[in-house]
Length: 273
Image 1: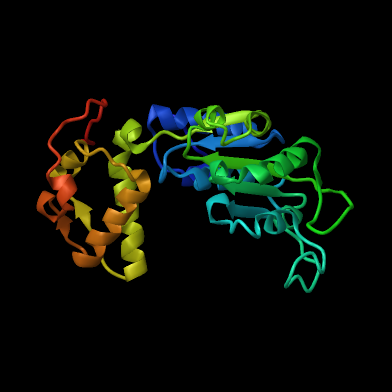
Image 2: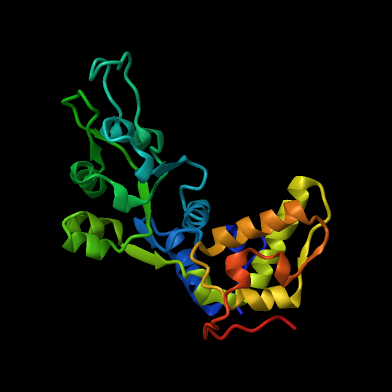
């Protein structure tokens, strides 16, 4: 079993499944190397948590860590938000403003959902990734900004490249190191430990006694596909904690789609003794 030190930022990533431990071992090595990293994984697997651990164990740990949800950037403001703008660059630009890139200067820029970035901005991001050069909207001057980029995606970027929706050259620049976060189906033995943690956290927030899952309930979890991954498990824990504080949660208390799931998935899952 892989041992995490108490002061290790990666200790916040709970679980001891071989698939997860393999990723963490690689992440701990590359965290100190000042290279760009691409994190792949389904929605709800903990990509942002991994990015935070990478930043905290890097040489830039005490410098800015700026998080950008590329899927939430408004199309009409995406370039300004990313690279900043000069006064008068567009209607309403009453002053010169820094973009996310300048705000992250010296530190780390986390580009979540990088696959959602418009093609028009991908070319400008490529130039920035290659040599640190960027240009504010409304300016004719280039500026150099030192930033490490960690990008994350739940898409198959190679498929998007074939479809013409993502630049191949940008993909290879961002994926100097690629970390793939396993989904919850691949780490089913971690479910009891994760559930216990989430129930405890919910109880602390609600100032109640923590719930527990019965063995029957935990057994039912092994038959479920977990499309929402860890995020879905956390939501279930919060749900039962709010409705049944301090009680043992049995199979009948679980959401209907989990109760009715009867097809066993072969995954090497074993319940704790």
